[in-house]
Length: 319
Image 1 (tube, rainbow, N blue to C red):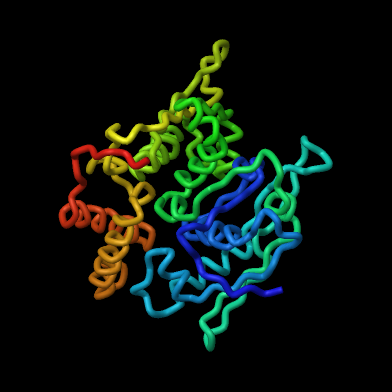
Image 2 (image 1 turned 90 degrees about the vertical axis):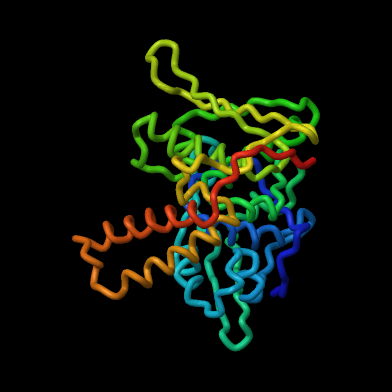
């Protein structure tokens, strides 16, 4: 059965807790598309439906409503259809199974509708959930720009009932479990780089989103070997008047991955302008396309800070 639907501010992703440490590596746009579609699954549903969203609704949700064509989304949809997630095996708790999120994604230029067929292997993690599941508000996901911040949000929301009751709760995750869940592979093998580039930036962005809580990350070392063994994420439920940071980082540390949704829209517009300037000359004098792209990103960030400076003050938390 096909359902024509549209995203709403009340949409919530209900997923089995095991999805929070499932192993996959999606881009921020791909992760948001997954959240958008699976938020339409209801706990009482007997089976998955195929869902169709209008292209304009998708663009609006992803803060790309000014893009009139569909070309920017095509590559993300094609890559998303091939992306695998490693999920816990119900029959063997020590094993894993692999599945795509969407075996079929369709698009009709005539109607502007994008169709998503949900993977059968995902049913145990989204259908008929009765206990040990997580509720993630779709607007919370869409308000973040970094994929690691979104994954950290899922872990926080898993324990939200406890956090609301106790006002403070520590979530402990083994370093290797976190690396595998977030699809890091061989990236950031140095623990210092992993903490600074991945964990700290995710925490900064999540705190800057002002969702009514503050996260503090502590790297815990093994007492015998001295190497990092786990991260303790302490989540504090903020009161109405508690100050929280406005932005995810200082101007010196700001990165593309850590941009808020609003600043990312500005950044991408500036980046397109910088790229257009560079198109006047092949490679613009750079020795490779990779180096040119990096230089353009650095320039776009520089202009972003000049045109839209980060605010230094603190603001009050939302309930």
